[in-house]
Amino acid sequence: MIVVEKWEGGLVEYGSYVFLDVQWFAEVLDPLFSHKRNLYGSIDLGGRSVTKNVRSLRRLDNDHIFEPRLAEELWGPDLARHLLAALKSAGLTFPMPNDPNEGLVILVRMKDKPPPGYDTKLKQAIAARKYDLKLIFHCKFRLGLPPGLIERILARCCQLGHPYPFWRYGALISGEGGQGSFSADLRYSDENKLLEIVVHGGREKVDAWATLSKVLSVLIKMLSEYGGLPCEPQLFCPLHEEKSMPITRNTKPGSRLVEESDFCPLCLDRRAGISFLAAALQVVEFSDTCFLDEQLSKEFAENATKVAHKICEPWLSSNYQNSETRYVWYEDVKAWILLASEACLTVFTAFVAKDDDDPRLWGSFLAVGMLLILIDAVLIGVLIAKKMKKKRADDGGGGANV
Image 1 (tube, rainbow, N blue to C red):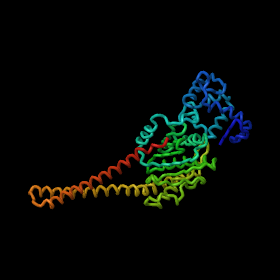
Image 2: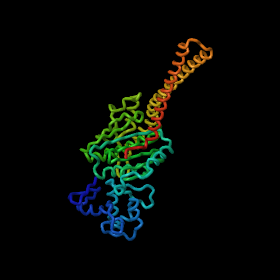
Image 3: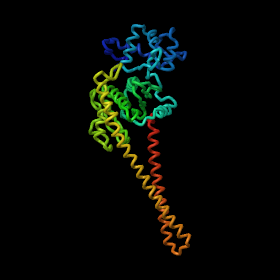
Image 4: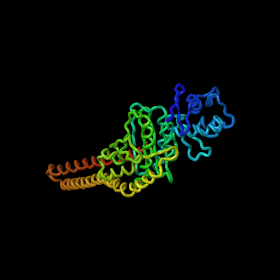
């Protein structure tokens, strides 16, 4: 963590380097993060002029991407190399994927609202890959977040895959190939003081769970720097989204993120579910360049196999099948009531055709038939309401508080 204030003295450490002149360090970085404009409407670099890399300067101004060649012109080749590494180590920037100029994204320069059409792009990404697993995590910060913390969290997490689109308080991160197949929606609402993370993936694979483990590990690591920051990290059961499970903050790499006693009480196969989360959700160590050391990577791969083939499918299938049987029960009852009402109306029609003199007899059949039709209509309404609620939950998986 690097906290630099012009009016404060102290030391700033970066690897084997120590910056003794904190004011100088702050003045060097100030133009990079400043939103000031000069008299000509261009970005203000603290009086420094750019003559060689004007296009890079425009890219920094418009796209908030800082290219190394611009850094070399501002700071000199030798100093630029170390300052760029310090910025990345501090979590203030992250590399733009597949960028030919090796540009670094500076989130603190961006707008704090998602770009237009973000939710539409999120739904399209989920629909294109036909994901059937959604993992939801919320973290409520009663007092809000310290300045720069959410940007640092996002800068770390954006290195998990391909981030696009992204803004100051959120990002859509997609994984392909060796990264696994997943879509992670991260966004923070400054108004609600809520960080929401929604990860989509396949039920038969561990990619979504591995991504969530890494994201939560980043969050835990960052929060450890703010020991007194009140927050409520909660993971929602993927089957019963109304039931939340608290995340343990004081954990070590390799340990589980959800304690056994906190597992969802509504899941049918509780033992399989506990084993499932123990294998899938664990704290992952990370550095500036990677998230896994060799030993932990091996252990996580073994857990991934266990999750994908031995635990995940039986646990999820048993619960999903149970939820489906409730709809089958409604269908059976509805069909029987419909047949009974048709029988009553048929008898009533026969009495009317014979001009029966006793209206009480055929009237009772009419009343029973109409009552059964009413009950059948109510059951149909309940069934439609449940299906619509489930459809809205599936379609609205990417929606979040902004």
